[in-house]
Length: 255
Image 1: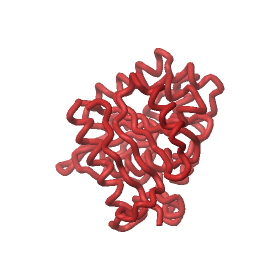
Image 2 (image 1 turned 120 degrees about the horizontal axis):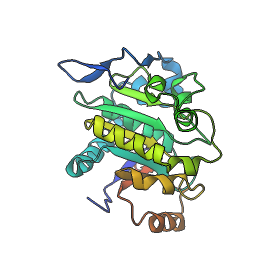
Image 3 (image 1 turned 60 degrees about the vertical axis):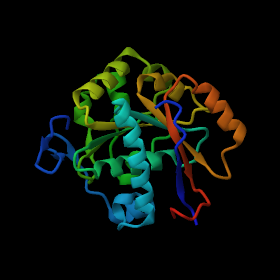
């Protein structure tokens, strides 16, 4: 049985939506609201379509450990990446964002920054051809592209069109200003960036200095030890929050 296991391996310790008495950002007066197909969510293993159980609890545990570390450092931006493709990075980013949005006093913004292989819109069945790349390339208003995917207190920013100069755009002054604005305007909002693999593209290494921390996803039986060592050497100056074992054979937390 597949599972997800978290390891505590810390190396270092629409924008105008309304509030209510239980939490924040539950009304979306300026944000497009998408009603997802529940069967599609289940097929894509998105936790909002499942009843409480070990799978959901695994992501709640991951959420708690991430938030404890981030709160202690007053961090609110997190990049999620892997050493290689097809290790479940986008799924981990999506389900972690949903888990954070389940907290009544939190909101989450999930940004798809994997321009060559975007997945988040497909997970929810969102039909859109605009996103972060349109802001970076064409100055499209960022708030006009936020989408609520049917989960309270969660908004998604799709990747948009592919960019062949994505590495340069992700570390451009324009992108840095956006990250800083999002960080400072809503300190209670956790902003998660779904990033491409570290060892196959330069996007993540170029962008990671501008976020507070990074979470690394590895797949048991697939991710090789030399890949982890190489990634660790590349990330030596980055705040690595921890490591997530995806598809672990540990049966304590079924996935």
